[in-house]
Length: 131
Image (cartoon, rainbow, N blue to C red; front, top):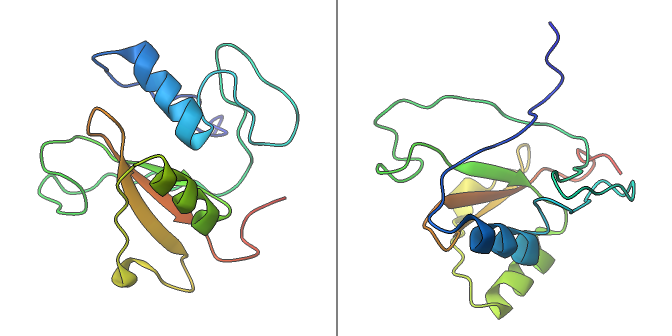
Protein backbone atom coordinates (compact mmCIF):
# COMPACT_ATOMS: atom_id res chain seq x y z
CA UNK A 1 0.00 0.00 0.00
CA UNK A 2 1.29 3.49 -0.81
CA UNK A 3 0.06 5.37 2.28
CA UNK A 4 2.94 6.40 4.56
CA UNK A 5 1.13 8.60 7.09
CA UNK A 6 -1.42 11.33 7.57
CA UNK A 7 -0.67 14.22 5.25
CA UNK A 8 -3.07 16.73 6.76
CA UNK A 9 -5.94 17.35 9.11
CA UNK A 10 -8.41 19.92 7.83
CA UNK A 11 -11.36 21.34 9.74
CA UNK A 12 -13.69 24.30 9.62
CA UNK A 13 -13.15 27.36 11.81
CA UNK A 14 -15.00 30.60 12.42
CA UNK A 15 -11.62 32.41 12.48
CA UNK A 16 -8.89 30.26 10.88
CA UNK A 17 -6.09 32.80 11.41
CA UNK A 18 -6.80 33.23 15.13
CA UNK A 19 -7.29 29.50 15.69
CA UNK A 20 -4.08 28.69 13.80
CA UNK A 21 -2.21 31.20 15.97
CA UNK A 22 -3.65 29.58 19.13
CA UNK A 23 -2.36 26.14 18.06
CA UNK A 24 1.09 27.55 17.22
CA UNK A 25 1.33 29.52 20.48
CA UNK A 26 0.07 26.91 22.94
CA UNK A 27 0.95 23.59 21.30
CA UNK A 28 3.73 24.43 18.85
CA UNK A 29 1.89 22.92 15.89
CA UNK A 30 0.70 24.28 12.60
CA UNK A 31 2.23 26.00 9.61
CA UNK A 32 5.81 27.06 10.20
CA UNK A 33 6.41 24.79 13.22
CA UNK A 34 9.01 22.03 13.54
CA UNK A 35 8.79 19.48 16.34
CA UNK A 36 10.90 16.87 14.57
CA UNK A 37 14.21 18.50 15.44
CA UNK A 38 15.14 18.61 11.75
CA UNK A 39 15.09 22.41 11.57
CA UNK A 40 12.65 22.28 8.65
CA UNK A 41 9.67 24.58 8.54
CA UNK A 42 7.32 25.91 5.92
CA UNK A 43 4.60 28.51 5.77
CA UNK A 44 2.26 25.66 4.74
CA UNK A 45 3.00 22.72 7.02
CA UNK A 46 4.14 21.50 10.42
CA UNK A 47 7.19 19.22 10.39
CA UNK A 48 6.39 16.59 13.02
CA UNK A 49 8.48 13.94 14.70
CA UNK A 50 8.00 10.29 13.81
CA UNK A 51 6.12 7.89 16.01
CA UNK A 52 2.91 5.94 16.44
CA UNK A 53 -0.41 7.24 15.11
CA UNK A 54 -3.80 5.77 15.97
CA UNK A 55 -6.40 6.02 13.20
CA UNK A 56 -9.69 4.70 14.57
CA UNK A 57 -13.35 5.39 13.81
CA UNK A 58 -15.55 5.30 16.90
CA UNK A 59 -19.19 4.27 17.19
CA UNK A 60 -21.59 7.14 16.49
CA UNK A 61 -22.87 7.04 20.08
CA UNK A 62 -19.45 6.97 21.79
CA UNK A 63 -19.05 8.96 24.99
CA UNK A 64 -15.25 9.12 24.54
CA UNK A 65 -15.69 12.68 23.25
CA UNK A 66 -18.55 15.17 22.94
CA UNK A 67 -21.63 13.95 21.07
CA UNK A 68 -21.92 17.23 19.13
CA UNK A 69 -18.43 16.79 17.60
CA UNK A 70 -17.42 14.55 14.72
CA UNK A 71 -13.78 14.28 15.75
CA UNK A 72 -11.28 14.61 18.55
CA UNK A 73 -7.64 15.15 17.68
CA UNK A 74 -5.06 13.23 19.70
CA UNK A 75 -1.60 14.79 19.84
CA UNK A 76 1.42 12.71 20.82
CA UNK A 77 3.55 14.67 23.32
CA UNK A 78 6.82 14.37 25.17
CA UNK A 79 7.02 16.01 28.60
CA UNK A 80 3.29 16.06 29.38
CA UNK A 81 3.71 17.56 32.87
CA UNK A 82 5.74 20.52 31.58
CA UNK A 83 3.24 21.12 28.77
CA UNK A 84 0.33 21.06 31.22
CA UNK A 85 2.09 23.62 33.44
CA UNK A 86 2.49 25.94 30.44
CA UNK A 87 -1.15 25.48 29.42
CA UNK A 88 -2.38 26.14 32.98
CA UNK A 89 -0.28 29.31 33.13
CA UNK A 90 -2.00 30.45 29.93
CA UNK A 91 -5.41 29.89 31.54
CA UNK A 92 -6.31 26.84 29.47
CA UNK A 93 -8.59 24.38 31.29
CA UNK A 94 -7.19 20.85 31.56
CA UNK A 95 -8.97 17.61 32.39
CA UNK A 96 -7.07 14.56 33.64
CA UNK A 97 -8.48 11.35 35.06
CA UNK A 98 -6.48 8.54 36.69
CA UNK A 99 -8.52 5.92 34.81
CA UNK A 100 -7.28 7.30 31.47
CA UNK A 101 -3.67 6.48 32.31
CA UNK A 102 -2.21 3.02 31.82
CA UNK A 103 1.51 2.20 32.12
CA UNK A 104 1.36 0.06 28.97
CA UNK A 105 -0.44 2.75 26.91
CA UNK A 106 0.68 6.05 28.43
CA UNK A 107 -0.75 9.15 30.07
CA UNK A 108 -3.52 11.42 28.83
CA UNK A 109 -4.96 14.89 29.36
CA UNK A 110 -7.67 16.82 27.53
CA UNK A 111 -8.02 20.45 26.58
CA UNK A 112 -10.24 22.37 24.16
CA UNK A 113 -9.27 24.96 21.61
CA UNK A 114 -11.07 28.35 21.60
CA UNK A 115 -13.76 26.96 19.26
CA UNK A 116 -14.55 24.01 21.55
CA UNK A 117 -12.70 21.27 19.64
CA UNK A 118 -11.44 18.55 21.96
CA UNK A 119 -7.70 17.87 21.98
CA UNK A 120 -6.37 14.78 23.70
CA UNK A 121 -2.72 15.00 24.72
CA UNK A 122 -1.05 11.57 24.82
CA UNK A 123 2.36 10.81 26.27
CA UNK A 124 3.23 7.21 25.30
CA UNK A 125 5.19 5.14 27.83
CA UNK A 126 8.88 6.04 28.19
CA UNK A 127 10.94 4.61 25.38
CA UNK A 128 8.05 4.54 22.89
CA UNK A 129 8.86 7.96 21.38
CA UNK A 130 11.71 8.23 18.89
CA UNK A 131 14.34 10.88 19.62
